[in-house]
Length: 289
Figure: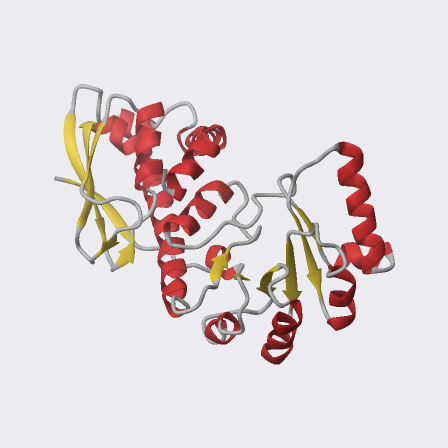
């Protein structure tokens, strides 16, 4: 099973809830505008066209929307999520009652435009570092309520998902360390919590300097070390010091200008909030055939 299919399977409940919520947000109890013009006897075909080159994303999510909430419609796909498409190409065609199509027109466009923007940016950045072993991670810097589609889009674009939220992994950050007093106390507190509650979830920890790194490497059960806001030189030095004993992530102020330099240090991951919070949408239109 492909990673993107696994995402749909794993988060099927959350995806359904997302679609239900956004449909209620937009449609409410009735689309009064369309209702005043059309009834369910008027059938038509509409095609979705992209207005720029992109990595298309959101097709499967749109398909689920129709399957679960607009079963009177049919969808004919000409591409699949992750395909490279060119400006002016028809992505898919939706057929059925005009009233029903128009009731989800904006929702489909919002989903497809946002997800395709994220997938395109993730794909472009991934290509820059394809000569290395490094992979791009997303973060929790997502649009409230839109996290699952946005993280799905990262996968479609060739990136890797970080934790989905606060519930599925422990990430010991600078605030946790400073509040605990020392990084060693933060680690011990985390281990005691996991043991007490018999929890089997991954643990990641940020380090800011060699002193903190020296403490962390004593604890082999930690799943990943995050080099937080380190320079290229500091990152290279830390990677050499860790010497393959832990998975390594670089985080903080990584962008298109320096991502190659960080990837070439030998880290396993770079995390970038920008791939979700700063991706430009891909303009599209849904027009009647």
